[in-house]
Amino acid sequence: MRKHKKFCIIGTPVGHSKSPMLYRRIFDEHGFTNDTYTINEITASEELDSFFSDMRSGVWDGCNITMPWKSAAVDFMDVLLDNASLTRSVNTVVRRCGVLCGDSTDGSGMCDAIISDTGIS
Image 1 (cartoon, rainbow, N blue to C red):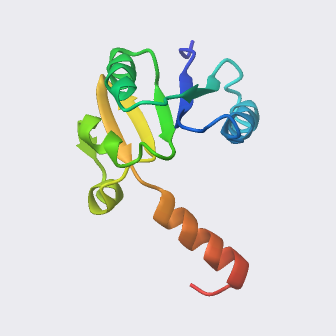
Image 2: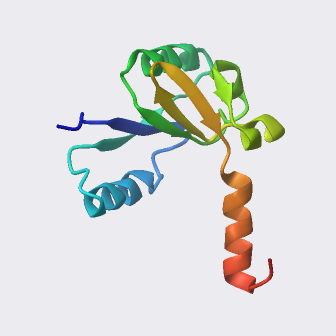
Image 3: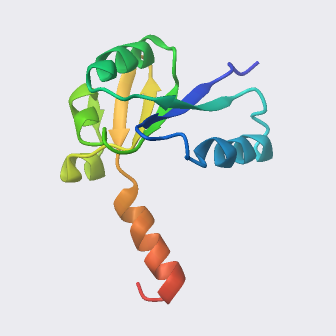
């Protein structure tokens, strides 16, 4: 049986985020009905160390990061994927065997939206 997975979004302010609703729909569509995605308001940079320690130890399986912590999160990653390394910004983190892997999907998301809206690649 697959382990229940826990995900969240961190940032401040973050209470308005639609991510929990979006991920709930994605989880349900793919049969991951026991997985959770919550809002985790982090208001001070001092809270990041504790959050990423918890994540590294297995409290969280992954997270999304919004402002103002995208740049600060870089320092907590064990591995930076190419986009995160290039932008020195992280908005997506996964934990694999206690290793935190950071990525940035902002640029590709923006390009996808432009292509979708304009038809211009």
